[in-house]
Image 1 (cartoon, one colour):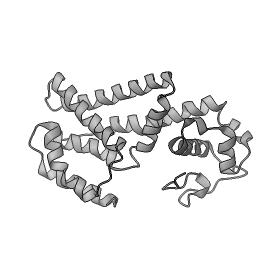
Image 2 (tube, rainbow, N blue to C red; image 1 turned 60 degrees about the vertical axis):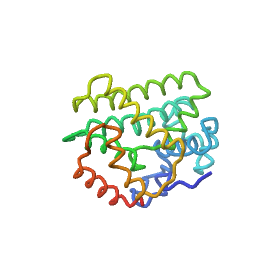
Image 3 (spheres, rainbow, N blue to C red; image 1 turned 180 degrees about the vertical axis):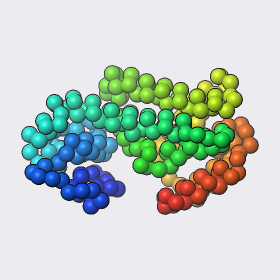
Image 4 (cartoon, rainbow, N blue to C red; image 1 turned 90 degrees about the vertical axis):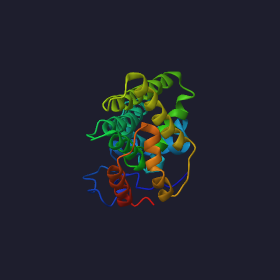
Length: 223
């Protein structure tokens, strides 16, 4: 199992306040450990006993926060939607002076791992291959995401058909980028921003907006 980039449990994170009283793990700890297991090992390994063993606690504490395993799995899906679907919507509806800024806001959602959890997104998609009900939920999430991106294009004068087509091109490209686990230096990716924006929008890019975007990405230290 790959080691997480950041502490999974509250108690292991030096930036957070120590747990009070006799509390050893929180609801978020159970959810974080379940998320980590889902991403690295798959949904079938998200089991109460094994999660408790990984955290070094009694499984009885689980029932302070969740009714049963299905309740935990539902919470995981709610977490996925809040982290990813809601994040895309938030970035696509940000104020923007033109379509260049709007598309760059969309890119901001994906360039920072704290804003879009691609591991979680594809773990949920893999899970849905064996769960038809979840497959329906995935389809609904994708439809909602595309609708949000479509509305973003429509705000800048694209007609309904073109806005829908450009939204699908942009969204499916971005998810495909992650699905392929494309590994390229950040400076190489940033060098393509201008032609990417021109290709996705069909309009001359706003150079000042691109310069601000590059500066902001550099500030994240992801190179």
